[in-house]
Amino acid sequence: MAFPKQIRLVDVAPRDGLQNEPEAIDTDTKLELIDRLADAGLRHIEAASFVSPKWVPQMADHREVMTGLKRRPGITYSALTPNLKGLEAALECGVEEVAVFGAASEAFSHKNINCSIAESLERFAPVLERAKEANVRVRGYVSCVLGCPYEGEIAPAKVAEVAKALFEMGCFEVSLGDTIGTGTPLNAKRMLEAVAREVPMDKLAAHFHDTYGQALANLYAVLEEGIAVIDSSVAGLGGCPYAKGAAGNVASEDVVYLLDGLGIDSGVDLDKLAATGDWIIQAIGRPNRSKAGVATATKLSDTSG
Ligand SMILES: CC(C)(COP(=O)([O-])OP(=O)([O-])OC[C@H]1O[C@@H](n2cnc3c(N)ncnc32)[C@H](O)[C@@H]1OP(=O)([O-])[O-])[C@@H](O)C(=O)NCCC(=O)NCCSC(=O)C[C@@](C)(O)CC(=O)[O-]
View 1 (cartoon, protein in one colour):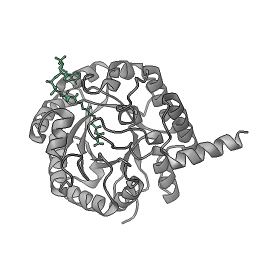
View 2: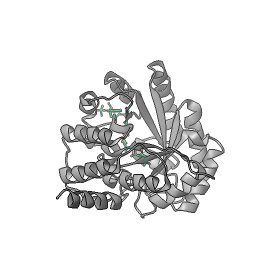
View 3: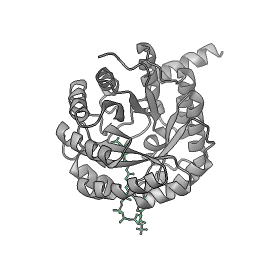
């Protein structure tokens, strides 16, 4: 199958990338990160998470982030909202897109959102209804699509079932999360084939973590299948608080480099993105996990003098 000509990249660094950081990151740093990503050409940025601060302290400043944004036309700044309480707070902050997040693993669902898969879907239904009333789009996430830290292997049919439920409930797009980055290209293809029998391919996104260094290979595999929306995180920041040892998302710089090489337009400027990755890792004292990011930032500093 031919590759798509264009890809929509969703940079999740301000949310997924930072949610697991042990030290508090000030709101101004988050806001500057979001603004720099917009400057680099990102048109979709996951900015915050309206979850319980007791569960994820790093996202406690969700209101300050969502109201402090220098909003630019044409850019979507989205936020996670696991329940009505989160959605109402996000609406007060003027959000135009939110996401509910479920899982294909019962054990992960309990650890992450304190309920079963069936209960989570019941909880999401009023979120979707209220969001529709408010004219706000809702994205759905399915975690553990290629493995679970508690249950191990996950059947593609289970992923397809949860993705279908979210889509039929009204999610405009379903993002498939390899939460612990254990997937490999063949598994990724098989999982996607199963899901695409239930949800149209153009309503699906790939959200792959890079724990085992497979994320780019997995993305190449699902690009071949027709995926046209990719979630990534600048500098490969991130990890999930409820998946111990899970590494960050695939690095945005690595994805842009791959897409540039394939002649696929992402609208993102690799040099600006690499400079943003270089800036944020220095700001929060983390290693840069993007090979393309490090190489590009090094080349830029060599040529600038
Ligand atoms: C879902 C809940 C809230 C259920 O948590 P719960 O304890 O079952 O909920 P509850 O309704 O019993 O409420 C307990 C307390 O939380 C408060 N509360 C309740 N809801 C909210 C809210 N929205 N915002 C702020 N506070 C809230 C509520 O007011 C109450 O406060 P208290 O009376 O104890 O002071 C909790 O489990 C939670 O916050 N979990 C967060 C999990 C999370 O953020 N995980 C990381 C994101 S998912 C992810 O990273 C995976 C993804 C998406 O990237 C894809 C992938 O890679 O796989």
